[in-house]
Picture 1 (spheres, rainbow over the protein chains, first blue to last red):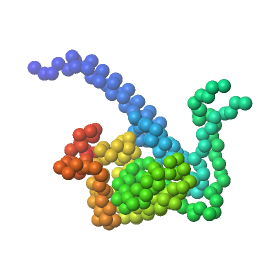
Picture 2: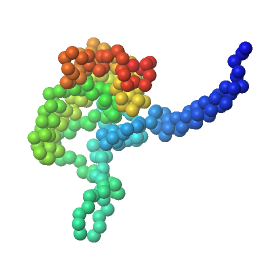
Picture 3: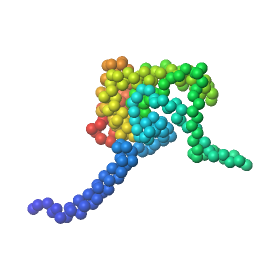
Picture 4: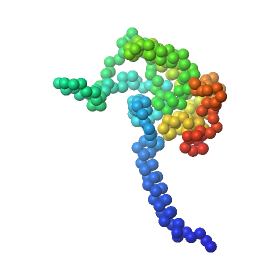
Length: 86
Length: 158
C-alpha cells in the first residue's frame, strides 16, 4: 500500500501558508534593515551605538571600518532639548 | 510651578563651534559598532593601560570628567585608532567576515565563533594581540575557546 497522500495534503497547505507568510515577513524585515536581520532586545547602549552609526554612515544599520571619522563627525552629536515655556 | 522631569525629545541643537586651539586635535575613530565590537578585545589587549587610566580619571573626577579627562581620552582614541589601522592592514578579510556576521546576528559574539577563530589566529600571528576574557575562573575554558556554543542558533556558525 502506498502513502495516503490525499490525507497529508491539508498539512502541506497549512505548512505552505505558514512558510509563505513567514518568508514574506522576513523579507519585509530585511528590506527595512538594509538587507540584514532585524535587531531585537535593543537597550540604551545599542540605541546609542546605532545613533553613532547613523551619524557615521547615514543609515541606522550602516557599518564601516574606516579608521578615521569623516570631517564634522565630532560636531554632529546634537544637544537634545525641550521647547521652553515662558 | 512644581518641576517635572524634562522630556528631551522635541528639539535638536547642533553646536558647530569647534574646540579651542589650546586643545590638541585628535581624529575620532571612524568605525561603527560591529567592527568596534569585533576588534574590542584586541583594543583591550593593546590599550589596557590607557583605558584603565581614563576610567580611573572619570571615576575620580566626580562629574567634572568631561573636561578634566580630555588628555587621557585623547590617548585612548589614538591607541584604539592604531589597533584598528593595524587590523585593517593585516587581517582585513577575516575582520570583515566577522563583523558582517555580527551585524547580521544582533551583535552577539557567540553566534559568530566560526569567523572569530581565523580572525583571532591571524591577529595573534601578525600583531601579537591575544583575546583574553578577564575574570575567567582557573578551571574553566573561556567561552570563546569552547567547542560547543550552547546558545547559538545553528551548528554551522559555531
